[in-house]
Amino acid sequence: MGKQPYEIAAEVRPTERQMLWQETEFNALICFGMNTFTGVDWGDGFAVPGSFWPEDFSAGEWAEHVKAAGMSGLILTCKHHDGFCLWPTEYTDYSVKSAKNWMNGEGDIVRDVSAACRKYGLKFGIYLSPWDVHEPSYGTGEPYNEFFRGQLHELLTNYGDVFCVWLDGVYGEGVNGKTQEFDFESYYALIRELQPHAAIAACGPDVRWCGNERGVLRREEWSVVPKYLVAGSGAKKPEKKAKAVTDLDLGSRKAIKNEAEFIWYPCEVNVSMRPRWFFHKDDNYSVKSKDKLWKLYCNTVGANSNLLLGIAPDKRGRLYEIDSQVLHAFGKYLDMIFAYDLAAEKGSVSASSQLSELYAPGNVLNEKQDSFWRPAAGDKKPEIIIELEEEDLFDKLVIREHIRNGQHVEEFEVFCENGKGKWKSVYQSNVIGSKRICPLKPTKVKRVKIVFLKFRSFIEISKVSLY
Image (tube, rainbow, N blue to C red; front, side, top):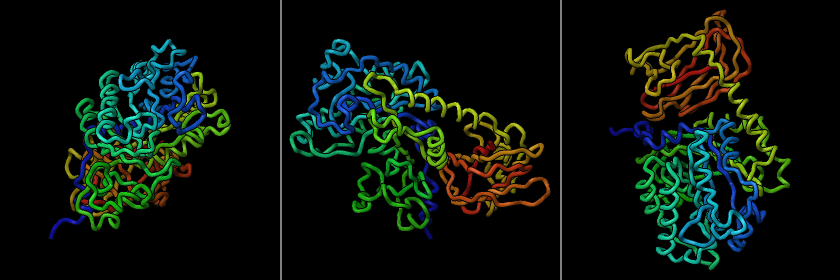
């Protein structure tokens, strides 16, 4: 008898570039361009280059605010659907080099932002829209594909290391009324050649879009999904691929019971701080608060996904005051929440079993990437117990799987004990993956027990933290 689909899925591993991307967890998408000055989110490609005039532009300020918010990387909208380029590309005059009233046409937003990212210790990424309503060659097939590859080549060779290339999956007609057949496979090949460590996100083979811009995830967000969901995979079920991003279940045993091919395809959630992606003055009083960002963070980073937060500088080329205040406040809030890990500082660990001394339960208290607890093969309902030196108060439990060897946990339950010997169930959920943040009622406890009720083949837990 052959392996069950869930057993095959349990053997799928992430690539090194996917691991590097997953470890960033929380990144910024800077939405800035011609749309900022025309007051729309989707430009028509007719705005004159002279309309672009960020009189007080500061890439350093952007990077400083992003860093202060606790983010790891910054992705810049180098070209949106309107086709206006934020670098002096050789492939079109529709770029900053034609904005003569700004820096005499010598400006380069991409150059300045990539340099600011290096200064502030941020990873730099590029957003490049395949849809270009301004470009005359759009809709001509290979001539446009050559044009697009040329722009990719410029961005991937002139601005240092790139951790992510974000290819928007939204596209339609060009100014000429034609639609384009994109040669995505050739785009991917070029990115692999020039920036082999860069993850290709959204309309790409490395990172999966969650399917909406509201921050709403599925009940189970698996990183291992059927291969037909992956861009450029040669989908065997085109009718499924069309609705894939809205399916409520992509990776459970039930969802994959008839599948045979799987791929590691982790989820990313993209949400704007404002109601719209680009700056609009009338959105100033609708910026997400610190508390809303925390809820969003828990529901994304804390649910086996990465969070890409949209940030919109204004016409000056600066962040509006309320945006910067919220970002700084949120960063300080994250620092406060995760400053002190009770388990690591005051805890000891025991478990129902361990595969060997190499995989001892105490490994879950350290930060070593290749250190984890793995129970014995015959342990059908493994459990791990964190015991504190004395009763203490906490309201968040964070669990991480060692995802370098795959994603396996399907269901787990958390129990607390206050020193009187009686265990009380306080939390139950499904997948863990890269990180699961379990919010709890503030509770004074002596011991915390995690029981793994259902899993695929085996489990490996790299970290357990109490905050």
